[in-house]
Image 1 (cartoon, one colour):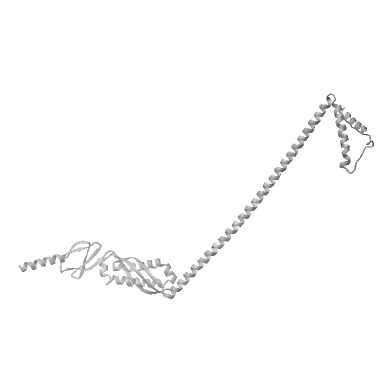
Image 2: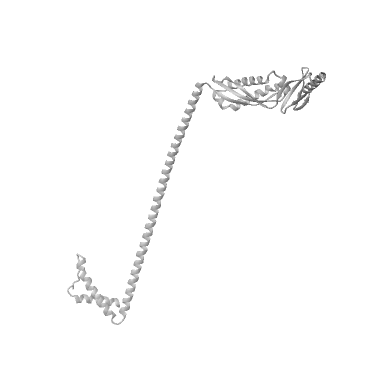
Length: 313
């Protein structure tokens, strides 16, 4: 009975030792009698117990590796405390097992030395501006060396670049001065634009005022011209009306003279006007020219009547 129990336990141990299940995105290295034998892929795998053994287990996933901080000296002899993070992936499990004793340590050390070399070629200001370039150089150097280790370096990112405190204070003062400079420039630009706008506004106002005055002058001139034309037309119309009225009056007088008793009425009217006009001479003028027979009114009337008769002929 004890023999069967021991045999059963031996079978169970044999099965456990011979059957290996590899998870997805993993690779196991099998050594047979101390030599590399095979790389087990994900799934169920059979081994020979006590002859085959699992020597290494690798994850094929992308692995983030934090690179410890270190002191780097820039080209202008400034110390920088730099740390970063490295992303890599095992692509060849066999080389990762036998290419180096510890590929994690090898990648970490190589990334630090490469980073010191790259930063040593740059000035302080460039290290802050050229982070992408630094990352690309480090990745290219690591990827070239890591081929023999069965590792693919995917990317490297600098987390912090910390200069000494006195440099930080100087940089802060420089940033403050630069901001004040930009503020003064912006203010001066604003004043300049304000003055330009005011000058343009004054010029536009002067132009509009001049145009308004010119238009007003033109309007006044047109108004005066039209008023003069209207006045001239009015005076001409008045003269025409007076002339028409005079002509109509003369025509009526002529018609009246032709009727019976018309000449006697005309003679009487002329005599009256002659006498009235002669009476007004002394009132309206200082110098009076009198006919020789001024005392004889009847002779004056006769003279006026003779003028009418002659004109009637």
